[in-house]
Length: 149
Image 1 (tube, rainbow, N blue to C red):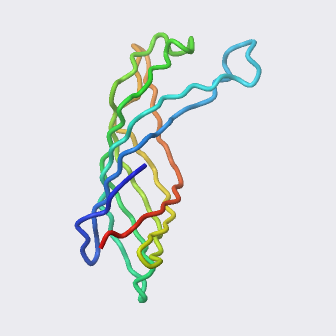
Image 2 (image 1 turned 30 degrees about the vertical axis):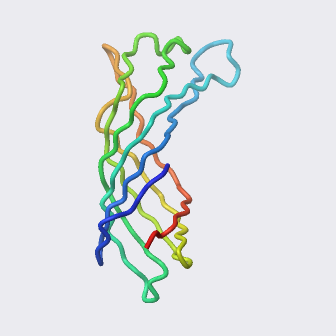
């Protein structure tokens, strides 16, 4: 992911990112395939989060928590690669809420951070007449940034 932080105020700021997200799973339902099959959905993701922040007394360390919308745009359609997906209508886009919490350390003009996030979906990845494919995803991100001013 590549991003930018802007509208910095004392207690909050906005963070926007664009990048690549892969969501997948292992299927063990098919007979004759040891270990199961992996299937993946590859997305371009755009998100913006409102981050509430708390600066340490030295102002070198920042703790934050945030939430905001995300949009995933499908880059591949693997339903033809796996017989389980033949009956599904894979959606071109899906949306949700990104929640996150983390810590950032300022070292001169560099920012090094560790963030935990959870993507709560609002729309399904794929649907069939009988069910939906949904992914609620969590992740951990190590970030490196540079302060322009």
